Each structure stands twice: as C-alpha cells, then as structure tokens.
Length: 82
Image (cartoon, rainbow, N blue to C red; front, side):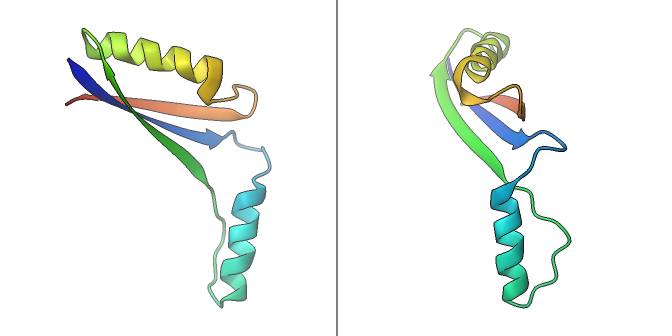
C-alpha cells in the first residue's frame, strides 16, 4: 500500500532562529507589527508499506538518521494512506 508521510521539523525552544528573525525585521520594515516569527520545514514522503505503523517507524528512522538534527530540532510525523 502507498502512504504519504508528512514530517514537520522545527527548532527546539530556546534555539536561535535567524531566518525567523530576518523575516520579522523585513515585515516590520514593511510596516507590519509582528510579535514573533517561527519557521518550519515540511517534508512529504510517498512510500510503500504494509501498515501505517511500519511506515511511521521507517520515517522515524529517516528523521533520526538524516532529516532532523536531534540536538536542535523537534519533529512531528503524520502518516496517511493514499
């Protein structure tokens, strides 16, 4: 069966976010009042598997090995059948 896994990766609380800070300054320069800006990375993966649990485990392994840095990132995984 085919599944779509969406991984949302964000910086852990307390880790500096220079991209978010730059966007905030640019928005303020344009006249918008913004309290804070956080940026996230989303990755969609299409893969085959026997079950949602199996796909989730594969994607979890991918996150730990490559997609996220566990020192500075938190991530969430959502799996759905196509």
